[in-house]
Image (cartoon, rainbow, N blue to C red; front, side):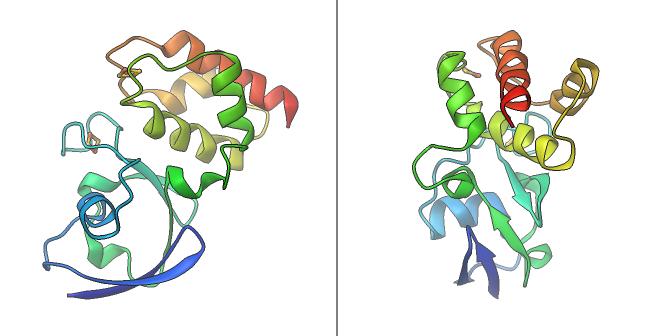
Length: 151
Ligand code: FES
Ligand code: FES
């Protein structure tokens, strides 16, 4: 199956199996390994990317849903790690092992695109379900609040 879509601002075409998901197409066909595999069942959030600006779990997003749409991955969030969230993430020293962090940042970026001044309750609600086994949740919230203050 051939699928044409926009990836991080550029039009791409890939040939995959008909049951391919966006996660494995990004990682195996397009070489973008910043998006991680955790559970494969839309339960952990490690694979979160944006589809037309909305946060989605790429592990359960079939390629048939992606045709002619726009996908943004962690690699496309900024050219040089200069997205305000990436800067705040460094300033708050959020990551530990790092495995979940691209999913965390993509989920947070979708939140701030729709609501640049979220309350703490809104942040907690939006980030609920993106699992961090290292327990960096407190610093994630601080980094999002720092970003919102600077926007
Ligand atoms: S790998 Fe997609 S939600 Fe866990
Ligand atoms: S930083 Fe290790 S799982 Fe989140």
